[in-house]
Length: 182
Image 1: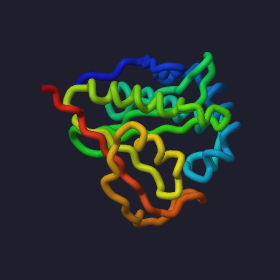
Image 2: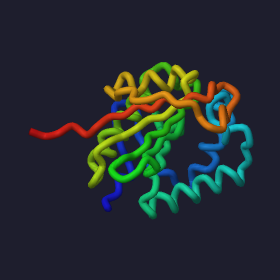
Image 3: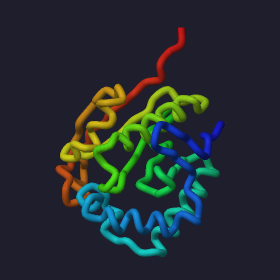
Image 4: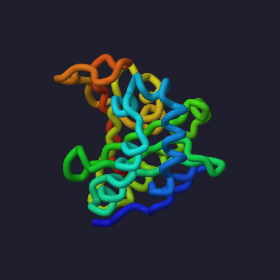
């Protein structure tokens, strides 16, 4: 099983594998983004240094095990968000997740980051589809898969209901299949 590159570049963004030295920049980005994250990300409700350090440690273990590939989204040398490829949708597929500091939204940077993940995801052996899942109420997240050519495949009610205050409890699943070569 191949692993992705530890650094990806696309236009103004650089994605790089998380490292423990990112603890303070990540904490700062999360703290400054709480109002932006809390409606959609249940984990944002409780922020502690220990919890962020545990996330970075888990990210390293998951990368080494081939379970998930977490990246810092950076531009101009600053950590401005996070994204990743996760093996949680079954064989042949990867799920893409992302968030961006609100100061940096509206500039196409999240789209550039996800586009880099799409290219890298399809470069991995055995990957034939990518998915993005977001709550129906999160229109900003919906714009990215739409821009990148993903197809909305299903909307379904989440059995346990919303997990964050901005959610409706309806997941929207977008899918992109690997292009076939002629």
